[in-house]
Length: 260
Image (cartoon, rainbow, N blue to C red; front, side, top):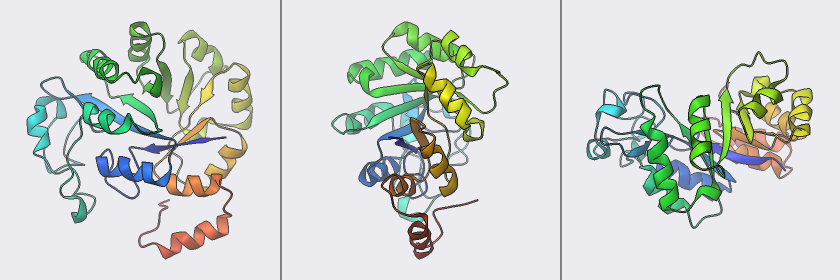
């Protein structure tokens, strides 16, 4: 069965990477939540995607240049809707306190740069404090960051994110990197690719799948998990609801679930 991971939470329904988005994903029945983590000025892991504050908050400048106290003053929801003006940037610690008692897999993407490998240490500290190493997947575009996390704790499940691969045999690269999984852009995934990866015991969790036809195709190909902004639709499809009925639901909801 394909697991459904909510990309930055239920980010079609709520502002991304906020507690509202995470709570909505859980209410919908998502199997896991994908989120992005980087460091504040005072080295606290905070949940936000962009290196700058401009797009998803009322702040400006780099996340790394603000203390966690300064970040907590910012409005992280009004850009999405005035109904979410009370949303704040969560810390990883706050999220794990909420997630620990729930039946959820947590996919933590490390938003890391070359000069900021302190993020690896700090994320590991928070995960260890909450005793959740067996519940998390660590993913990143950085091969070095993933290998470092595996070195710190060999039990971590890690997944390499990539947009485009020129590897003729991607499973060989995955084995060399000691990967448990790959998180490719969904356009990289073919039926042959899936068979090859599974033959070599490598899980495949493509991102970001928001179109019904692509969801159906990847479920047929038995992807291990799919990362989507729209867990609601993915869960309906997995449950066997026909596409026609999903389209009716879509039309009944103001501002469609699907953006092409």
